[in-house]
Each structure stands twice: as C-alpha cells, then as structure tokens.
Length: 313
Image 1 (cartoon, rainbow, N blue to C red):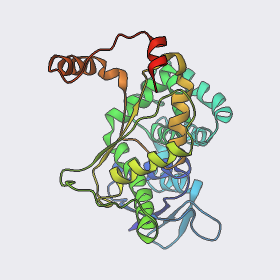
Image 2: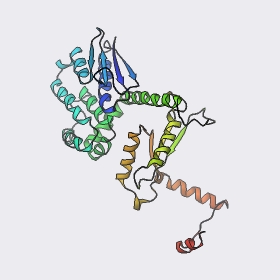
Image 3: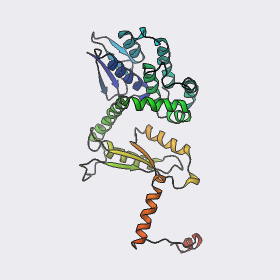
Image 4: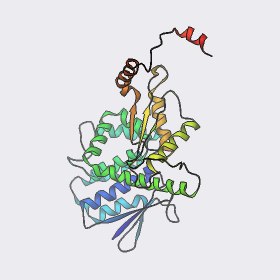
C-alpha cells in the first residue's frame, strides 16, 4: 500500500492541495488506496520536503511531483478534457501564495473563467477544482480576495458544500497541528487550571472589537480560549471557539480591522469554529434589559453625559 507522509507544521498552502488531491484520486480509484500520515514537523527528508509519497515499490515521490505521478498511475490523462484539467492543476500553484500582491493576477483570471461555470472544467468535479480549492483554502490571506470576487466565492462555497469530505481533510490537517501544540503544552508551560463540569464539552469566546489591530493582550486571550476549546480535553475534543466581533461602536470599526484580526489569528495557529457579531443579538439584549428593569434589578439612567462626567469619582 502506498503512503503519503505530510509535515503538519508546514504552511497549509503548501501541503493541503496535495493531501486533497491524493484523497480525491484514492476515492475515484479505490484500488489505489493511499494511507495518509501526519508528522509534527516543519519539513521531511534531507531536502526539506513537505509531503512524501512512498509507493508500494518503495520509491519516494516528493512535493509538486506527487499529484502528476498519481495522475499518471491511474491514467487520468487519457480522459476527455484532461488537458484543461492539467492546465488548472499547474495554475493552482500560483494561487497557493501567502500575499495579496501575488494573488491578485491569478485570482482575477480565475474570476473571469468562472463567470458562467459551476466547475473549472466540464460539468462535474475534477482534480482541477480540488487543487484550486485547496490552494485558496490553504492560506487565510486569500479570504479577503475570494470574498471580493463574486464568481470565485460562489464556486468556492459550492465545491465545499457539495463535497463534505474536503472539510474533513482540512480538519484532519488542522487537528494534527493542534495535537502538536497540545503535546508542547504538556511538556512545559500550559493553561491547565482544572476546569469543572466539562462533560458536555467546552465553548469559549474571543470577543475583539474591530476598531484596531490585535495587540499582545489580545493574543494571550485568543490563545487561552483556543487552548480550552481545542486542546484542554485532548486531541479528540469537540470544543467550540467562537470569534464574536463586538460591533457596537460602528464609528470606529471597519472591515479592514476585522479581516486583519482573522489573519492575525491564523498566524497564531488559531482557527475559530464560528464567527458571530454582537449586533446579531441586539434584539435579545434589548429584551433582556427590559426584563431586568421590570423586575426591579436595573434602571435606565437618563442623566446628561456632561453631568454624569462631573459626578464621576
């Protein structure tokens, strides 16, 4: 049986497309079962490889050569439309980059190509969709650009929704990195303060206000909440980390700060399970305040601001 070894600490954009493609090819051709193993390292082998495919014959195929090798082995190149698929597999590398400037041109070409398409090639899912989707999913920096382009964002969400297994692959890679962090915490300093009543799981919240960039205090709070949600109960934890944007001061908030916060969390290795906004709950908050006032446990103070300031200690 062939085996794919993945450096789980390597940049996701460098390894995720290959892992997704390997999984897809194995699904399309069941006899070609490939075992995927994650190593808690930045690189593999003497040449700092990120992924290594060990064939049933003991040969080693590395990094960018893995997907072409698998395509040759199952003879997918003989299928109709395969020339276009090959082209997009090659072009996916231009989308697996961590900076906006390099992404701008390739994603504009992708946007134009998808103007009247549900799939990159033909009328069904191909390896082209998998490789390009993985390239865009690998780096969080692509979120802003992807959401800016309507066709690309539509296609990306469609591929994810219609192929739930791609999310499972992303989760497996993410969990491998989280297990690494848990092991490091167990070996040294950690946040273990003995939480009680965790039988039903743990839900934590990181509530930044999108009115500025993250600072060191935010980083501490984010790492703490990520630890309890995803590592405190072990690698199989099903905890939830909610990133709740406190959007209650619109005059000082902007989309730029929100996107920057998500990008900084990604750089810290933190992936929120859910994103929400305080404004989603305004009606619920209002009704709660009314109940408190009616029960005599709160009151509404209508003192003018300048007078209240004078009376403050």
